[in-house]
Length: 221
Image 1: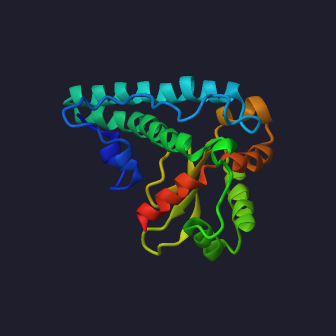
Image 2 (image 1 turned 45 degrees about the vertical axis):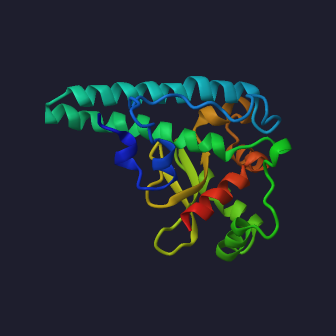
């Protein structure tokens, strides 16, 4: 069966996230959250997390499975080409959100804490001057996205430097290794922060899982 993971993801955290067990069907499923829906409050509400995970992410999973099934059954090249946009959109939505949930952690479990002397903190200070300067630049670039998209801290595989990158809609980050990703679609914040994207972006740093980000950086180095 055609696999969006094989198409979009190079050997990295993306590919590892979507590797099916030996002998298993390549049907994508909604991953469980590693924390309760209310665990990120007050920074991200239980209502947002519940809808975001069970409705929006589930829709991408359903759409990806349907598109892959149609692609596999079709022998018409034109029809397969038409399906590329659905595969990209829904596959990207599944990839991005699966990374996003792991990007977050309750404050009681270390969310928002970037340890002194960590490899990630050193890399951020090397490439942006300071953690606060990094957050300022990240928030500005992400808030400037027109419409919907994602803000990323990515590792440039060529230069081995951290860079801020944005992607539109549900396009996954394939030019860099994703270290931190933040969803800037309205469904990620509107019920709580209305149209004030800067407030959402400032708040989310309180629940960013820097431990997971550090792990991704170390694995990519």
